[in-house]
Length: 269
Ligand SMILES: Nc1ncnc2c1ncn2[C@@H]1O[C@H](COP(=O)(O)OP(=O)(O)O)[C@@H](O)[C@H]1O
Ligand SMILES: [Mg+2]
Image (cartoon, rainbow, N blue to C red; front, side):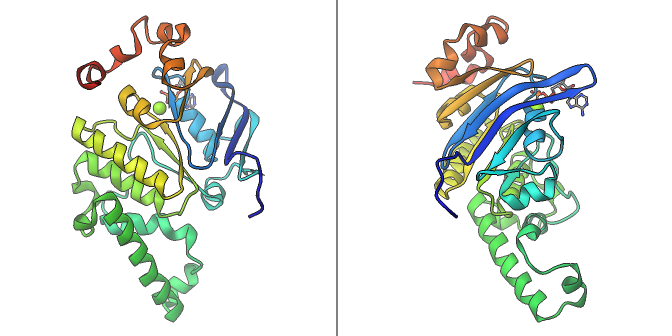
């Protein structure tokens, strides 16, 4: 790749309207190489819709999404191929496939072997399959799921299903990972482990954009955090900037930000 001053992800003026509802309103955001960026906001603020606009699930009404200095076509498989992977707020695993098989599904955009090769099962197929399995097992080791490789996805506890979604997303070898509420339904221990996992992913050279309600999680992890309220980005910055912003406090019903998560005041030093 040629060197460029452009950020890894550059979102410019993205608006998403559904009939009369403007779910995302003129939002711009950048994510640089190696950055962890947070996206917070009340329920219904447009966070997931924003992700959907980045990943080709929705075609934004207005605006542009550039990744590695190239305009992204609004087609999910092309976005994945370009190097953006995501997890879903509502877990989307193949419940009746094994943990390993779920990760193998995530790898298919990176294997050259096409469908005919898979049907004919020639030597190329077997070589590619062995390599894919090896890579998938590495990811299961990395996410701490290796011992459950042969379990059905639906039998995993909730926290591990979220980890499996991350492993599957990583299988597409992304440069940017989008996480939509990765700790929803996790207990405090699992949440702390998830923080470690996010740092470890960043240390692999993958940038991260994360939607989360757990403020401690967000402020522990993120280099910058953007706040969406009613589709608009009202503020973006470090912990101080976000927590002291009057509009943010008002958006969270007048309560200080910590008030949205009792764990912050209890265990924050
Ligand atoms: N496909 C859709 N059709 C119509 N309205 C939608 C659609 N997707 C999201 N919305 C609406 O957009 C708004 C933002 O939703 P969402 O992005 O899920 O919020 P958040 O993730 O911040 O909780 C909500 O009012 C939601 O009902
Ligand atoms: Mg959402």
